[in-house]
Length: 363
Image (cartoon, rainbow, N blue to C red; front, top):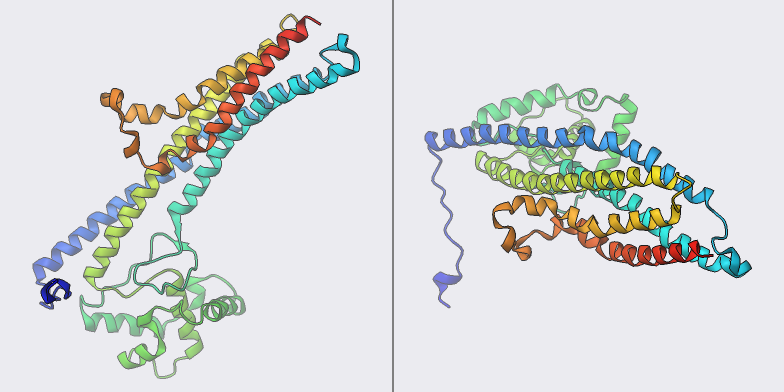
């Protein structure tokens, strides 16, 4: 291997032209619109009425009604077997209670994944250019500072005003004592790494942007606030790079969030429909309640995986006969991959429950 192949590429130190800077500023403006659109989409799903309406109806009416039927029917279903009949009765109950529990747990598991995705979408512990040893949770949208290479003189003027007018109450609306304790504890626990490199006292002194009567403790607290917000002094090129990464990050998380929202909503709809169909039947004294529950949960469990695959089928509607499953992001399939063994177990249990329900009718 030659020296030319192993050496790093040369750094182009040629100053950016005004046209190049203008193009970068225009790009940042477009990205702000795109980021705003992504956040509006996320907000629409978080505040979407679908799950908010279905969850209370599902828990209050469907699950509550079916549990009430099981408790009402709690008795020896094999009376001719005497006391031994309690054993097959217990097995019958297990075969029906487990699918009922899964019909509640799977949609709620989808809600859990959805809430986790929301937290991941809005929060992070990393930030490009920030100290890697500081893992303080912060908002995914970082603060934006005036680029230091746009105008060094303007940047210095901005920083001078910041340190002359430093008021912690503006950033954190705590009392003076509480805000000082808050920032001082962050400084201590991170060994000062929470402060951006360009905002250390040494760098600020060298830039001559601090007032003559500055308070070092107050300046450090102000800089800590910038660090918590991940407000770093970047160049225009660095700001563009971070924006590109931020857009990619938000798209990655939002696509997963939306996918899981749809799957969770489908699970709630499917489970609610099956439950509401079973409710009047199990309350009819002419129809064996356990048989209805067994058949109902067999139908529910046998279609769960298929219904969770619907979003994939919708996306590949023009190539349904040749869906490349190995090309699909595993994170988009996490929900069905996790619940798949449980739904197969539910199918086996409901089949056993149906057989025992038929047998109990003959005793």
